[in-house]
Image (tube, rainbow, N blue to C red; front, side, top):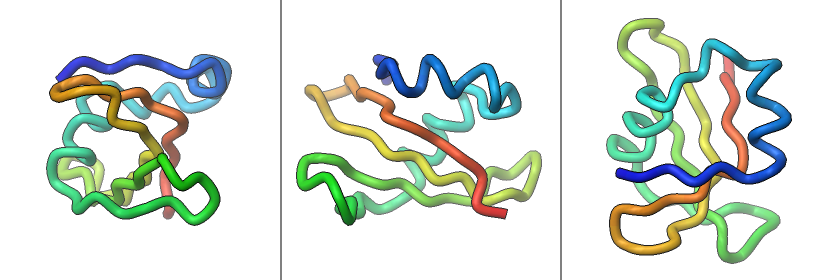
Length: 77
């Protein structure tokens, strides 16, 4: 899966160095596609990441098959 980063995520990434690309991909693959509350074309992925046990939420858009644009990601707990 290829990740494209939004400008917002590029800025927020320095404040969340513990969220890796592998954790984001894991959350997207192992979660259902949930529609976002505010953006009609965005999707949410909520998944528990195994090494840490924390719950990760990722807001993303599907660009094409195998290509995803990350809007933001954050820990819920």
